[in-house]
Image (cartoon, rainbow, N blue to C red; front, side, top):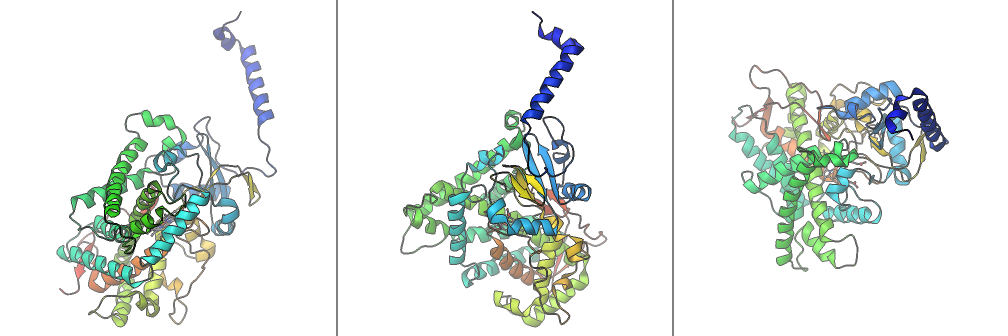
Length: 498
Ligand code: HEM
């Protein structure tokens, strides 16, 4: 009897083995009615991970290069997982229009996400649980003031607190990013717990640092998503994420317990109370585990995205002082200096609205959606999207599509104004920084309220400048985790009262 070494050293046997393996692969290979999307050739086992898992990789930049080479629908392989990138205006619009019957679901084959979210909450659930929790979160945010006075007052108060911090620096250069994160996070705290943190509260600082780490690490290209065993290696990002996630969980559970102890169904104070009231209603989605996950998701999804957009806006104002002057002139004309900006002012502030849109378009803070999936092999744009693929809408390629915007790389708020200076909803279907369809962002209206009141107040009170002798901000998009940020840049906020 031959042993394995003899077989492997005999070229005839090796050739026979290769032919048999190829024949088995060819016979079992899945045949699709339409071809698979094109894409770079994958390596055995690891697929295209070397392309995606490079240090400091910006997925949207890789995607843009692939779009130039292969077109608007591109297939990659990350270990065993198939990734599909959908790009450009027409393709993404088609996907969002067909969202509800094709792409509405999130995949359940990314190990890291399942490990952390455990099939609870909004972001990584599907079907009835996702629908019920989305409905609950949207309804409750409306109830507690998105679009209403109570939340407007909370955001105004937070804007005032931010102004105090900026004023205290007396025009000296400062990064301020953490202060913007605190402000955004306090708005979520107001909705969820009915309270806010002081900026120097150590519990708040720890909560923010935990949220930051979870948000940065938990990306679709986390290696443990594709090779779960990597979590046992020292330095595993998934294990680190779990540790910080659990710390947030402990805090959230304490808050829920405190609410439970003082709960009065006749006096519903906030998001948590509303949940406690519905808990016994028989709806299987209304469990404490789901409540906890939804709260963490609101913090995670609503802090970094909002703060980054504010920083982008300020750096763009520093880069384009004429735009800053025009914006301030409009604020002074409509609001003056004596009172704070209100939501209803927006109807008289076309330039501020155009500015907000252009900041969101230009920065593409969420350059791609989290993964969607298809539940069966699905035909799309002449290709087959295989069942259970991870489908990403690369929103950056839509917000910067030259066929739609003409000069996408120029920052030009005027593109959202008509000849007489009125605000126009230009390219409404292409301006979707919050994505569109059945899985679009549930924080969209809240975020837009925050931008209006924060930008309005900050530009009313401060002139934003580069530090003396410093270069202007670079405006290069750095994708850290899932958001596009600017390079860290110290801002001089000079109070107008000086
Ligand atoms: C600049 C601010 C924001 C941007 C650009 C943004 C963008 C997005 C995008 C692109 C998605 C993915 C949609 C998709 O998969 O098709 C999303 C989902 C989500 N966002 Fe936001 N977001 C922002 C702020 C917020 C805020 C303030 C909150 C919370 C109050 C929030 C909560 C969520 C949640 C829970 C989801 C998951 C929805 C689901 O899977 O059903 N976001 N967001």
